[in-house]
Length: 146
Image 1: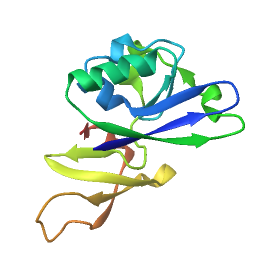
Image 2: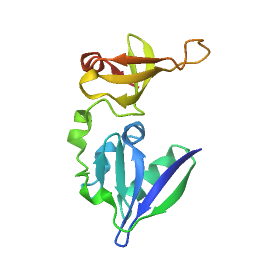
Image 3: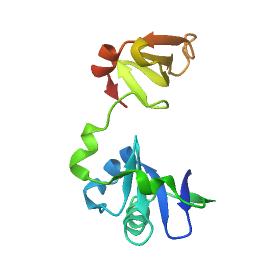
Image 4: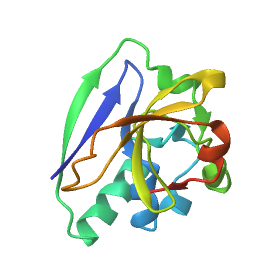
C-alpha cells in the first residue's frame, strides 16, 4: 500500500503525489492550476484536486494511506503552478529518479553539477546491483525515465 504525505499550513493543504502516478491514473490533465509542481511531484490542492485523485485511486482499486505533516508556512506556495502542458518539460536529473540507459536500470543518487550525475545500478538478482557509476549530462539526455 502506498503512503502519501499531506502537507498543511495555517491556510491550506496539499497531497504530495508522483506525477507518474497521475499519468497512470489518467488524471494528469484533470488537475487544476491551484495545485503545484516541484521536480517529479504534484502537490494536489486539498479542496478539489485531492478529491479527483482519491476518486481515481478508488476506481483503480488502489489502497493508500496518508501521513500529515504540519508546517508554519508551506514552501509549496512558492512552487510552479500545475500545468499539464509542462509535464513533459520537467528536467531530468532529480535524485531518486529511476532511469534506463540501453535497457539497464539506474537510480540517480546525486547531481554532481558539471561532473554529471551519480547513479546506482538497480535490478533484481544481479550481483552488480548497488554499484555506483557516474554518467554525463549527455548520457542522461538520452536516458528514458522509468
